[in-house]
Length: 429
Image 1: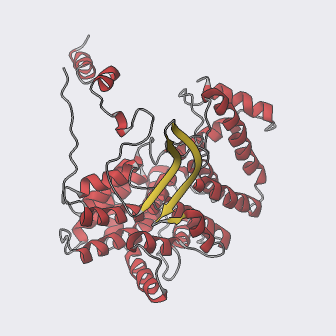
Image 2 (image 1 turned 135 degrees about the vertical axis):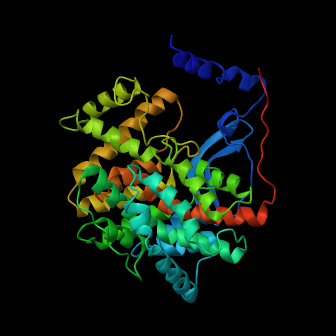
Image 3 (image 1 turned 45 degrees about the vertical axis):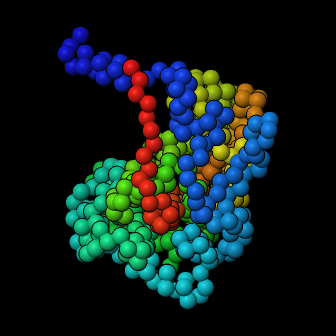
């Protein structure tokens, strides 16, 4: 064995802790209780995720609920059946109520102003330093924006709000330019840099800046807007939002805290899960011929028995850490995806997703002896596919929506939680 191989062996041996020690010391691995529920570590007024009921007999499955500032997500969605609503919902999450007409005009103007990146930023930060990972590009760009801020360390509420709005507005532009730089320098494709357009929605700007011909249909804009709205918030306990809170309690600046959140979301166990759904679907499409129920069932069983796809035995997009019966976001996106598939004459693709959902849940329910909820990644992936969004933009688009929730939680944490978050660790030999 070489010296370096020996070093690696030491590294592994001396840094691995037996799972039995977690039980022995009553340590909540993954901040999870023994029944799988999350350990209560904070309070928030911003969002609530409800997927089960606590009873004397234990956890009881229930229909999923997602609330933004106490309002059911289904009721919020109804407000925007024929128009976009991401910006109004962002205002709701930040300020605690929907804006009136004048407030919305001011808020939209601030967002519009923030869409245009600082002078020389596009050339020097994005084009001269392209990245094969758009999430990496977003994270670095957020940190560099610190240098373009005249008061980056000003912790007053007024300045914090300005910085948050700046990031909410700038992120779609960074995403689009970062993607085009990556496509040009890594994939040898033509380079497109389209300026953002004022008095248009975030969804419209994303489609405008991403597509070479700038074109999009009203339905495409509405569906992408809805996806961003549904990604905007998911309670304080998801990893990236918790990361925002942890870093914020140190007293650090906005750019550092939100760059950390982006780093969290980049991980495949968090934001990257939507990409795995698409890769699994591609794997299935390559191996089936007639999309019959029998054919789909056989390949899903093969995947579960670790004989296919990534050998992890998972049907991605089915099952959720909190939701037990339904994920309300998936239910909403399924309806939107069907409408978009119909417009694009791709109902066969929609039918495939629906069959995989139905048959996959039947198999998993029998195997696990508990209900299974389709999660938002499943139909979000179909929406991305129908919108012809490249796979390496799935998680960056998730970040674009979630930036709103991160900012809301940062401000709430600053105003409500003055103590630094510092949990205890038990030393073991």
